[in-house]
Length: 168
Image (cartoon, rainbow, N blue to C red; front, side, top):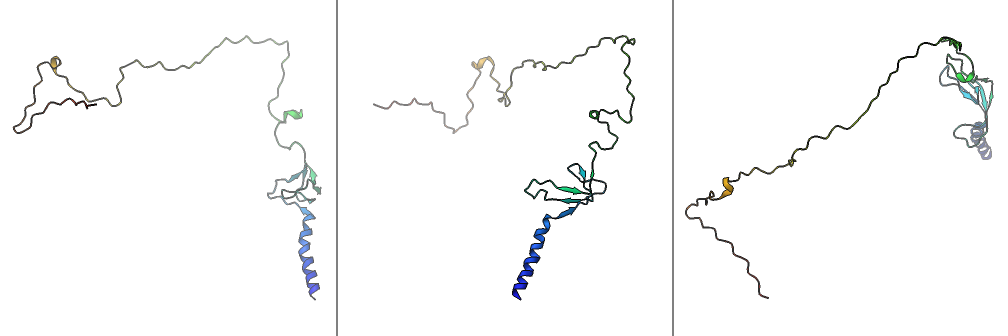
């Protein structure tokens, strides 16, 4: 009984591992937008083979039921490399080489230039933080300066003494 149960569990767990190598049916995510694999429209077709971002082998998938896709889409665009004329638009006609040419246009010339602005006139430099204005006495201060008046009881200033030299 135990051996039969173990065999059943082994078979049931091995089946999903073998299912990854089967086939896939491709269903587009948006209607009208084809899924193209190697130049074949694989919408609603069967694809066989291991492929995708998670696979490590370079095997090419096989598409069953897809239809080949044209290299040029059937839209109203003009591709000059195909060598065909556009389906609509103006018709270009090359004029003959011996036609009369119109008179040449008058000459026209226009030019532009750029240069730096001229430097400003030199002015005496004023510092960012100028000192306070000090008014000097007239005549260079000769005979006009007076001793400040002192109040009674204030000590008179003493003249400074010269520093003494230390003995050697």
